[in-house]
Length: 205
Picture 1 (tube, rainbow, N blue to C red):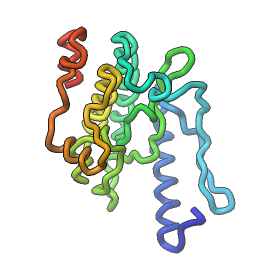
Picture 2: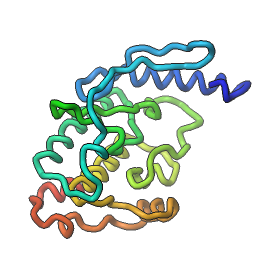
Picture 3: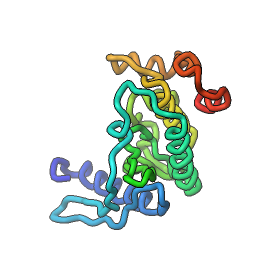
């Protein structure tokens, strides 16, 4: 916060506190808890639940294809977390492997609700594009209005990557990724994993 001055600083602190309150409402076994928010010497901080575990992009080797039981277990727990948050009108907006933690007892924890916001909140930042390329929904890429479905799209991208061993939308160029997300269908998952049940492929698609 000390890098900001004047109105920008006040707005940042206001947004930080608001986001902390929003995230703190999500008390769920598959969501990393936010316990407190305060400001120390002008700098805001969060007190969060400590999770003994690793993110999915560390739990699964890059380029490897995860087993079906593991992916189904991941999908169900993340969907449970998102369903709970969406019930409060909270959109995560940045579902990606780095924001999904896997604990030693195979429990999933979704973290980083810091860029989420209540869908009913009137914010001038509503049209700002927030998220991570390769996992953003087309609506996010356009910077337009979004709803809870953008989180489902992002989770679909995560599941695709775990199963196929590659991203559904990828390029070395940021603009290329955005173009693909808006205009091009992903490579068929069935071609990458012919062993998968057709019903699961339809869900990811």
